[in-house]
Image (cartoon, rainbow, N blue to C red; front, side, top):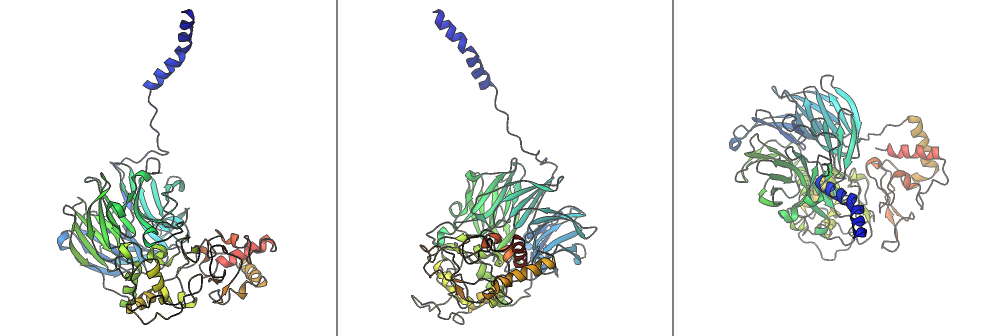
Length: 599
């Protein structure tokens, strides 16, 4: 009996500890920084359209026509165009200063920010952002201040509107696109990685960054539910590692959710639009209605809007709209949704209570040729069965704006293939890493094989051998080719000392690089075996087309199989390009600078 008592006494501290821990709850983890007060701090979201504070006037960018449209939407079912004004090349995003006196427009084609007087609807000035910076999104939270994302130089800049100049530059990760501002928190969406960065403005630096998945891409849209502290990001998942590619295993349309209290991705709440609604292509913009708990998603490649009930994660409605919807704007009481159809330059007006389109309003007069306009629609479109099966895949999925997606796709029969840029194609035939396409119209082969479209050529021979001409066999195929050849080329954001560049040029010639990378485009238009590739997977004798040396600053990784993640790796890995063992480090650094300076 005494032994039992001693055992009980010995266990008392342990038992007390268990009881105390059961009664005391673990503290709720606090965010790194206190969240803004949702009753006081307004959110500012970048988009291709914006609404004045009084809810009367919609301002919309027209990227193909280089204009800004003013639309009277005070009576939504009788909306009308007020005026269209030229602003500059390739406008992408528009924002209003809080007093609604100025409209700010990013001009991607000119590397500038346009400033427009709203009352007189006149262009006041353009503010340079820097050569090759590719300004994308803009927001303004003060009458004399704006923030602009620069996709080409991996920066977000603060612009002093009074001084008409960039006040400070904040380095961020690659390809910044969409922006959202809530209090002192500036959220930056990265186009090709799908990451979201948090810039804390009192410190003017990135304090946190989170991934929505290693395979997410085409991410520029965002909206925030301030009541719940949740951000919604429309994105495309790229299944580049799949070695058995079929059209419906290439990409997946999703909306990811981010808990802003800790900048934490919520993969368990990811909305897979192909099952929540139906197969759609390229989710691009979102608008959240926190009162209904609905999410509107503009699908830029399938020309529709998915209406998602966030309580169930399933679609409430599916609304067909115009060509290439890229922007969404709810009015003040969420009774109407305005959808910006970027390619056909229209606004679809949706009555939200019925989730139905009630009007389509043209907002711009085309200033480009019909061929380029139709080619742009074909490039971005996944609804035409000639281009894609089941609304699944479009050319723009991997080549948005002619850019490479930064991925190496494993599932091609000839072996892995790194996505190249599409600029100045007229100067760099033949095409593809295997060099088997002698004309742009050979893209017909990719449409049929990868996108599972029926093709743009009506009488297409079965088992056609490579080399047969495809030009002039289909009007639509020819205009798609014309669009690809007319893609505007970005400037080079890199600046180097001229002495360093001259040293790099000499190394380039001394090492015989110009034997294959010759002329203004940096290619001899031939195929070579340079010691790269996997003999067990490649089936073309390890011969690869000499790529152009243009746009190296935006086309990493390198080689046909993406095996060189950086330009330095090109000269470090085994093979004919290896120089690290024979070239002085200073000369190698100069060579890298020279190559990165090509335009």
